Length: 507
Image (cartoon, rainbow, N blue to C red; front, side, top):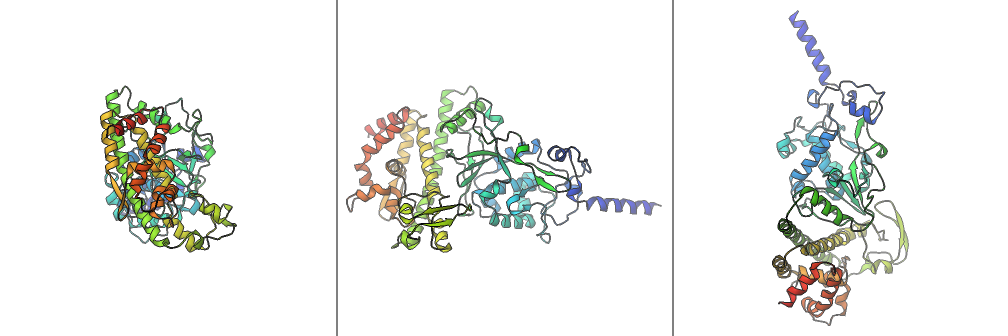
């Protein structure tokens, strides 16, 4: 009799452990699918289920508000600049958005999918690889290193997913100015702008709390420092869609069923200063009653952080310019592009007609369609041109100089001295400082074309009017007062122009 009972228990447990995730229906599934759908097996956790070859099991786990909150906290504390290095996987901007969500989903056994490439935690393609059933949430990196199945899935997903795939998994949300932004903007949300995607990573103790974690093309294993970036025309704030078991099939829920869905996502702002308003409102909400002295110190720490990022980005651009110049040296745009107007397909499947003269006379952004001669020429251009990087660098410099206006005179002098004294080589015998780059960029935007001479890449078209043999630094001194006047005009209503004037008058 005892043996019979033991056998029955073993049979019952075997059936339980072999249960499919599709056989588990929770209140969450009812909410997003149909109230007529019966709840069943809702007490079965992923740890009660046997390994069936999926990338990971989920059982009764769903992306409830509690898990969304934990995801936000995890992004703020764990999604640091070494995230891609810890994963050991190359990533562009879309990849890192998916990676962060996937890693958190894996460690907590939550559903995950990339609808555009039919990727999900339910795939069994890598069933022969080792998997770690229970991840150590406090030491997720160790669990990740042991989970070969998840690593293989992540590698394949990164090769196939792009920014346009994000649109099926996220939805635009409405941000209302006169309501608490602390309850609307959350870490882990996704900021979409033309040709780029970033993870919102709010830092409550920072002078500029609204920050972003992002990567770029080409996909690489790189350091990903927190950045402050302006909101370009066409941007949108986005949250993640729910994934629910609807009649035995896990589906990504329609945007219209999601909380706060709206295509009118900046209600009440209506101007280009929306980001400055967001930063100020969040700063006041996170630091109520802060003294002027403490606010100035916060601004100074923020400036120092921006300068560190600025130095890193300039080093990256120096390397990109050098490699592009070596590749294209002695050639021109004509060697790589059709000379006649031609309709071509771009990365997003869009078409346009561009001719060579239009191409040569315009700095192209990431989404611009252009008539390359062949796939090799297209790849070469994407690898060595820098339009997106230049836009981000210009944005970073502008934010840095805007913040200086919050500092007292002593700190302004300290910061400007650092910007002037930090020099880098644009050629073997020619150097520029960060401050001078900012000055000349006010006069004329960077050239992003890889066949241009390094001088033109940093000093743009104005360099063409310099007498032969004149060094960049001499050119800048020659144009200095004009540059300073432009800077003062841009910041006429702030203290920055006055402080810079005062600083340089005292030299």
